[in-house]
Amino acid sequence: MRIVVNGVEETAAPGATITSLLTARNLTPDKVAVERNRRLVRATQYDAPLEDGDQVEIVTFVGGG
Figure 1 (cartoon, rainbow, N blue to C red):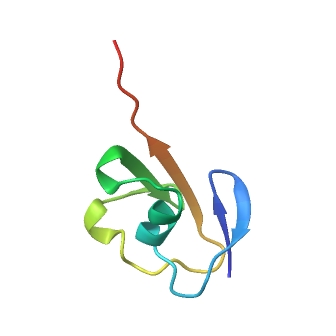
Figure 2: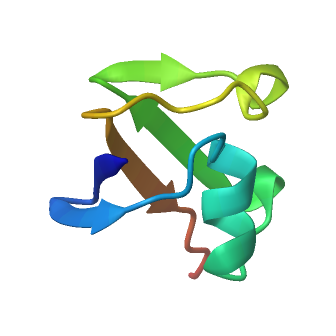
């Protein structure tokens, strides 16, 4: 299926989830914020299957001083 992640179209396996996208990018759920189709996704919903055409934005938290 086709999805868009951070503005880049890519192919994802059927049944792909936000968790699987994060794992493939070596990101941990506690250090990111995720939107799916312009709606904020709670971490408890990261295992819901994505659908063809979904647009996902993954933003990582950066600390500093």
